[in-house]
Length: 114
Ligand SMILES: *[C@@H]1O[C@H](CO)[C@@H](O)[C@H](O)[C@H]1NC(C)=O
Image 1 (cartoon, rainbow, N blue to C red):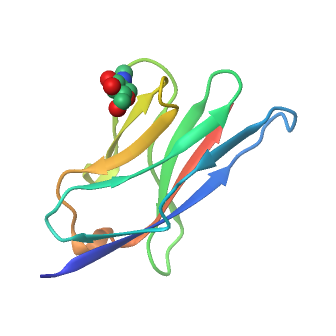
Image 2 (tube, rainbow, N blue to C red):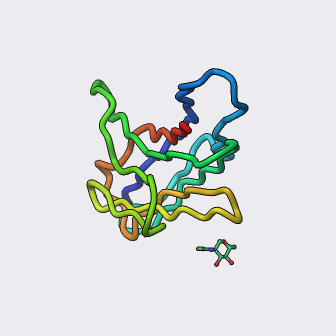
């Protein structure tokens, strides 16, 4: 069966430079069979209200925006069939897709700012 490889990296946008904030993506690589669901984990640490987003970088391409959470509905639907759910009590913003394509093989970036 064909498979997709999902790589992850945490990146951080610091606006104030003073507050402690970071994102953690606990898994470096998430192998998944084509057609299967995938969850790419991201937990954040930020004082104040976080502004969270996901980006993707395909091989030999630039960074592409997937989705962002600012306020309101915690379930955010984004590009390419991805969605992410903001969970304040878990301080998480996991990226999900119900059925992965081979072309989803890429590096995924979780980003936080305040
Ligand atoms: C946050 O995650 C916890 C543990 O998975 C879950 O019980 C809770 O319902 C989630 N809250 C929201 C708002 O999704």
